[in-house]
Amino acid sequence: MSETAPAPGAGAAPGAVPASPAELYRHGLRLLLAGDIAGWVGLWAEDGVMEFPFAPPGWPRRLEGRKAVADYMRPYPDHIDLHDFPEADLRIHETADPRTIVVEMRATGRLVRTSDPYDMTYVAVVGYDADGLITAYRDYWNPLAALGPGAVLVESAR
Image (cartoon, rainbow, N blue to C red; front, top):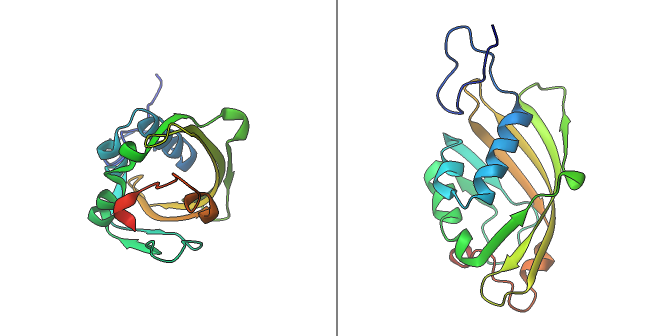
């Protein structure tokens, strides 16, 4: 008899094998590609924290709580039409903490306002709780890409 992973946030069913952080992260990427921002935000713990250590002036450096993450991400599809997170560029590294991963990835798509290509590389450090919800997400993206012409990525964040 095969056991399956619970849906993130659902808590582990008796006898179920919890999803690994890597599986949970890949699920989040699928939600983002589908434009399901509400679903992606649903992967967060109520008190989860998102940080942007390299945020340019005028952009948030820290979002505290699921609501703040939701407010930040809500307009994302209006600015970026994601097409892919190429598997060849996706590396998920385990750490000494079994609930923390380091992710290297690339996102491709187009900027909605200008139809210019979108191609961004990221490094993220992501922590999960025992229920598979995101508790911490440090996003080391390239802020210079957000400052270029036509590259308003998440306007409400400014």
